[in-house]
Image (cartoon, rainbow, N blue to C red; front, side):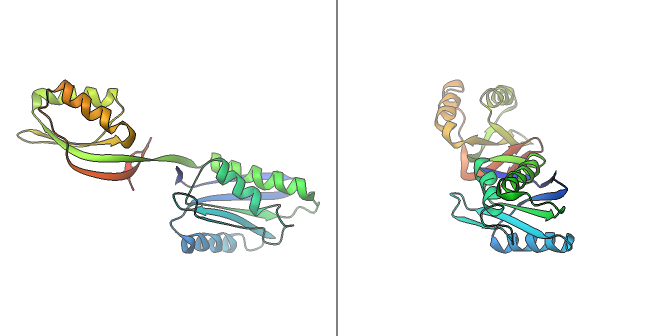
Length: 212
């Protein structure tokens, strides 16, 4: 699944109507309502504040609002952007300033989708992965070989502590765990063990690794 790692905004103008999208990461419906109210206060003079949000690992909660626009022309198109991008725990609020020209059903749908897509494009969307975190204690003659193997297999080295030996904490994607552990056993003839195992969800982005 994907989540909003860094929130963003987008804007489109259609026949002098301005559509401003704000994209948020949310933890629950209470936080969604908080952000919706914040946007309404910021753009208090706008005509419409339409939104959609999705919550849960399996998109259990889905809600949207046309906020006075013709039924199905705002909230649903915003929702389709969220679902098509496969983002969860996400809220998009699109504020509209009316430009004096009616856009019609098709025009409204296109404008709300375009603004939402622009907001997502200007956000940082990160993939949430299932992983197994654990530690290995290795000697200094072994650490280089282990680091090379981790890099080769896209295994995250989360932290490294240097003392009498090296305590290295790594994160392995769940679906590659068995093959990685087998390769560790084969490479080091069973001399290394992976301890203190913990199932986690994590993000590996340009900003680094974050455990959720």
